[in-house]
Image (tube, rainbow, N blue to C red; front, side, top):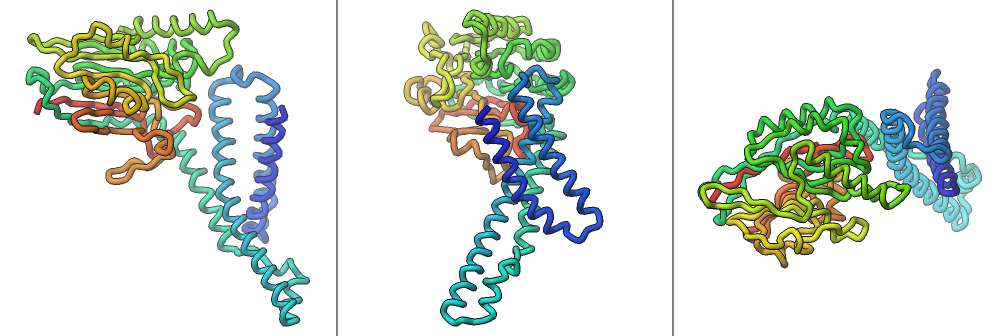
Length: 418
């Protein structure tokens, strides 16, 4: 509760500070008081929601209400920070002007400087800085709201052509469709996933590979979406593995047995949908005596805050590597931390996990996201020699119910022999 009260105090201080800018740009307007009422009404609403979430179990609130309410409070508060930066800059400049006036009075006893010092109210804010702060602050506000309305379901099919001298001619043109990070617990309705499933099936895949995070926390989240997801088809089948959210690590369970049962139920959901889930296992895909090997490892991360459940040693036990070898591993840090050095037979690793932070710039010639300061490989195709990593940007979303710049992805990888 102390942390909640501290958060509320910080919000109130920020809101009071930003209110100075609101007053400045609206002074003289006949309807300014209504703007002030609306401003503080939202602050009061945010404080009430934060207090209520600390007193009552917010996870029992209606899903749509809690999702969009918390998101809106975060977006508005985040946007105000940009205004604060400009106001702080303005206050620093005002302080410099005040100090200069005081110094001028001391050195020259100039009456003008003395008047400026004694009447500090004459050292006013720079109007352009205040207005610039409000304009800049409005950019993330409206952008992130638009990201909730449109970006979360703006599915993009990204096509990649990958050539390898190891790929047998019989597999030339072999098509992999990768999906990742569906996070069914974030969807308010099954309808949006219907669109995604239709796009996936339109790609006419040889295999569909799902690289983890079917749910946010609990297996029940996937139940309303099973009928949609079981319609995903491919010539050689649909294969899947687990991501960090699938283990239920971010929930307080009543007992270890309950948590274990949740995972077992989730695995059964994969199987019920016709997905061949690889729990540190491998499969072979054969054409005319030639083979591709498909390896699926449980979540394995080099970052301490994410678990290492997977074992490549188990996944490759008794394996007879194919001419070309594909690894499904949820966390892209696995590639550089273990796969490149220890498992040189792996030709391409498919990962997800990062979502591209669901925020950034992703256009030809320019890619940026805050997640790149945590993960070196965070979206798209990477290559070391003749070996590849592809990081899918995710199909769903988590936390913030939208996407800005980094849109949900269905990856189509066409393999070609050199």
